[in-house]
Image (tube, rainbow, N blue to C red):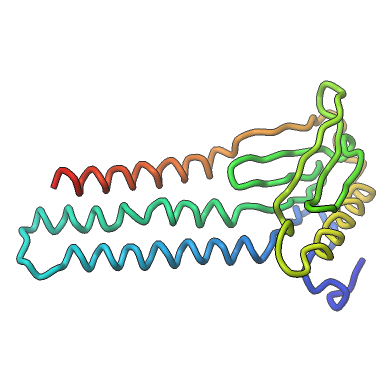
Length: 199
């Protein structure tokens, strides 16, 4: 196993029964940018709400409601943006995307490549060859080296944990929580716009 000095990106981690989650610092930075945008947007809208014109309590409440609803999509995007990760478990590897997940049990993994993105070749439930890609370490300075170490970590995990349950099958699915978060954020924005128009 690599020492911390050999692994500045923090890719390598001890393989234990606890799932190992690997994510890019760029996804965390992107989520922070969305949060900052949402905060500035909310502050700007609240400034318009309190414009000193002596609006009634109902009008002021509607303006505050609108100001808080408009940034909702940005907050939802922040929560979804930070979700991208690769999760190594005893059962298999999960490529966690922003809105979709792909889980591949270790017995189905055929190969791991690290060209422009880390790509997993596997055999699906019907016996056909399939591929899954992750956006983790797909971009940025030093991304090539991090992709190489991530691919090696997956290969190592496959060797160590290959004795996992063979009854599991690969599966792709929409992730209900981030889909719900984005839906709520968009609905809140629509509700804020409707309140502003009807006001």
